[in-house]
Image (cartoon, rainbow, N blue to C red):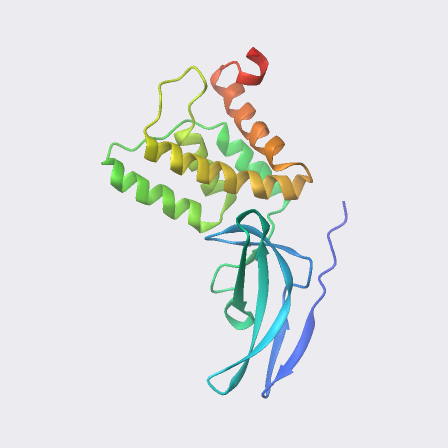
Length: 190
């Protein structure tokens, strides 16, 4: 599949030339919120100077975020992962579960940091480490919350990259782990 052409627009504002890395309609990933779609670039006057902001809509959360164009890279705003990076994340799901023997509160902080990194491989590590098959012991409430947040974040990006429904993406992720661990998936058992 040929790589998409990068459309760079240049806008002059107050003697500063700003390259726009994203255009209207592009899917992007913001580390703390996951996959969103660029609605456009807006100009605002802030403290007497003009500022360009990406307007990003996170449909799932019904949230709109404005990110300064000049700070987008530092904020971690990035394009969707390549198919190869998603493949790496899926391979990570098949790896050995790593549960560090530290207090849960410390592990929870580490998991949250990985989720908020926006990196699909790090998010896949959280999903892998916290996944419990339908016949495995019950998770605590906080484990389930973190697992669901990581699964949702990874499934959103997988869904957009592979052009499938988010529910199907989540099933695909869990099926990979069920197969690796020798579980019968709940969908197969029904």
